Structure formats: structure tokens, C-alpha cells
Length: 243
Image 1 (cartoon, rainbow, N blue to C red):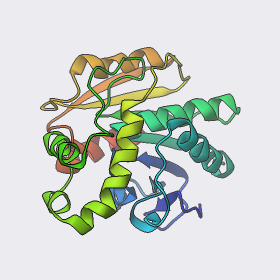
Image 2: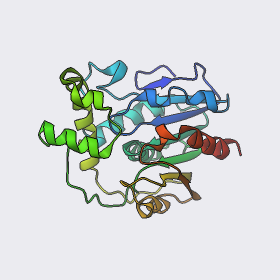
Image 3: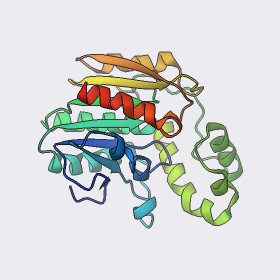
Image 4: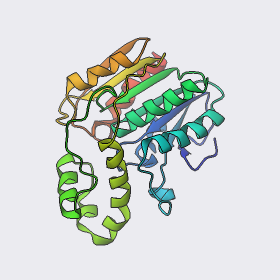
């Protein structure tokens, strides 16, 4: 799959494609080494959105409808066999909206949908928006949430590079519209045991979005458990996809 939207870290086509959607401010490199711990028949494809990494010179997209339509365009053209969708935090909601668009186009459903570290799409956001805060306040909010290296937050040049994409991502988080859509797919939901940003109850709400089975998995770690406890996450994915 040759695309500037997805990086194939497996360096092979693979029988089954695992499309991975990163958290706010993240990029495809989050998934760069996943293939080392997953079965060889899986091709790990990390989403690379505009405004970061290899697409740094492109303007970031801050509109969920526009972004997910563009991703669905890419995926619908390249899906020609088994595939799985994984998304963490904002990435889970982006993946969900893309899956809905693919369903509406008549594209075959994924074998599995894996939602990680995210409240259910049907839940109303109660936190105040942060994407349009003055820079000092925005940076303080990023510190509270974690996940953004302090080196970036303290360096003027790095801030000018990374903050536009972070603001764009959090605009999508802050403006996300509740959805009651359902997907006909087997689902698994991961949530962090020590995640103080996503409650277990809000993660459990995902069960209403799938007409097939939906299983839940508690993972040790905070909101960024896919980075800090990667091996447990990959072990779960192996169990789900291989048995």
C-alpha cells in the first residue's frame, strides 16, 4: 500500500492489514516497531496525518469530517482483503468515523475494531475546550494531560513546529459531535487502569456502538499505556487476532 497517509512499517504487504490511528499530537512512528511483536501475516500501517513527521510541511487538518473523508478515500481504494482497525484516544474516534464512512460506501467491515484509551463516541464531552487557549495556557493544559515531551514545550523553535498540529488535533477533540452510529464488527476495547482522563464507565460505553461482540481489557498504565506498556497491548492484540 503506497500512500503518504499510511506508513507500512512491516516492509511487506501481509495477508491482513492493521490500520493504526495515533492519539492527539501523535504520528505514525508510534507504531514503528509493532510489527516486531506481531504475527508475520500482519502488515502494520500507521496513519500519518498532515502537519507532522514526513508531512510536516503540510497544513494540519482540524476538521473531523474533512479528515475522516480523506482517510476513508485512501482506505477504500486499498482495502482488498482482511483488515483490522486500531485507534488510541483521538485515534479511536477518528478510526470509528472512518469505519462509519467505509460502511456507508459498502466497503467490507474490518475483521475487528480495536478502540483504546477513549470514551465512547456517544458520550458528550464535558471538559472545557483548550485548542484556542493562549499559548502559555495551552502548554499548561498539555502538561496536565501528559504525552508531550517537556523538550518541545520549553523550546521556541520546537513549539512552532509541533503546536499547530496539537491545536488542530485538540480542536477535533473539543468539537467532536456525539454519535449513536453502530458498526457490524467484532470489537475490543482497551482502557488504562491508572488513566485519570478516561473513566472505566466512559470506555464501557463503546459496547453500544457494535452489533457484534464487544470485549473489554484493562491494561496497566495511565492514558499513554500504548507507549508505556506496549508489550501488554501487543500481547492482547496477538491473542485477539491469532487466539
